[in-house]
Image 1 (cartoon, rainbow, N blue to C red):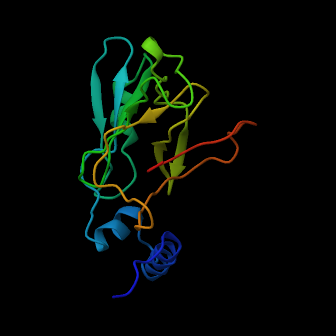
Image 2 (cartoon, rainbow, N blue to C red):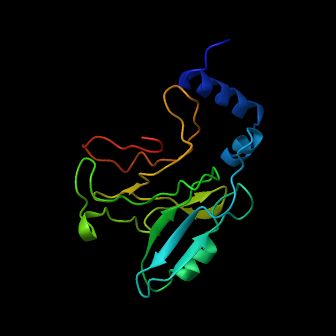
Length: 176
């Protein structure tokens, strides 16, 4: 019996797979591994009336469709209330509850939610939004299931803006 691949070896395998799928996006790579991205990417919540809307990609595995978000959030502010897990396991991220390293600044110690419009970007000529993590902002799921442990391989995809940072440490993303 051969040993399980380490995370480092799994990363090399994923990079090799990515180079063979030259124009593939992250959901294409996940789909080829049997875990396609499905459904909305995130949910926004309006401050004016508390209504919510799910934001889906323009096409399966594609860029988020910013048009419905812009319309829904027009003339008010919106926050990103849920970041949806694309694995099909329901490990969605919501505002981080009290606990961990510090109690959050939000209501009853919960962390704040990110502004839904603070990080506009353009991807291949299409408008989209990122998640701008300001101090006091946090998302977490304390009851995630089916996540990798130990040396099990795990795929996480994120795009970070290196111009937004501070002198503090640290930022966890994914299965932390």
